[in-house]
Image (cartoon, rainbow, N blue to C red; front, side):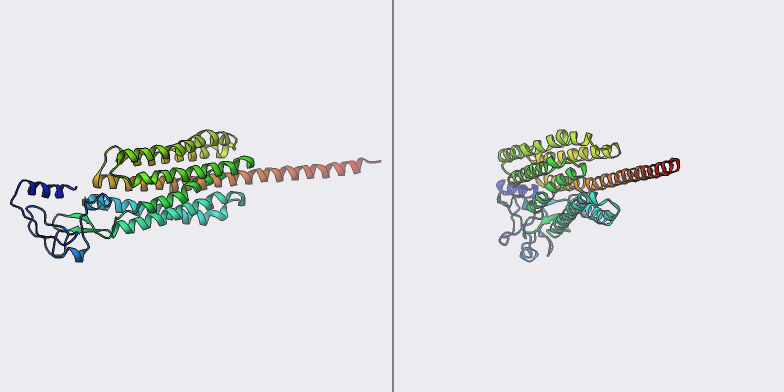
Length: 345
């Protein structure tokens, strides 16, 4: 329970002088020593049904009784706003820049634009649900959860990941230009592994009060995760070495950024496994996941565009050299014909 609820229980057990008012079903009671809160704020038993405020204590709604500080509430809200703006801006940039790329290089940035658009929409939904799910108590400056449901619906974030994570891997394979015979097989294997990883992790996300089961699902999800890491480091490493020097550096950077940003997700997931609880755990998880999404999608998307741009420039240079060589060969042939005709008897 939150500290205030624990203090209430302690006072009653000790036979203290504080006697809470009869609260409406699911309503708050005034905290010890504060007296009756003013009308229209959390804790006012005469108004709580109208305000839609409650403090639930069942395991199913275990975190609904959490109380967030001003910094915690606004910190998550601000981070989610950045989670909307960053991928949203990248989406607009990528789609406006498509015409500046070679036709053969437009597929990767196009898919990246879809990924960042989905990410921006998901963050917007989460930000709205967070901002609308709390009410501030002017007496203590704390933010209380309404009884309309949990402010952060983790299912929305996981739906986002099921759609975008396989696409992230596909776009990386496309810009690396894996040989045609290997490309479709690698896309299918990594895409399926990504979906299995996310689906295995979600059940553990629902088990805040069961650390052992959370560890179990974490372990299961790490199997496809490690396979993906192996593919990024080893299999795609070999393909990267075959690329032109002009783009090889950026391909390595994209793979490194992918590995680093993806490693943050299991690190955040482990927070609750290692005992992090309460509002701090919620803030750590939501802010951490949002920052990881910005790195893995918005920043990665800009690298994908840069790689496609370099490959387009390289293709243009090779085409120019080929045309110059062809023109020189044609000129040499013409000169040879003229010389042959002139010297002919």
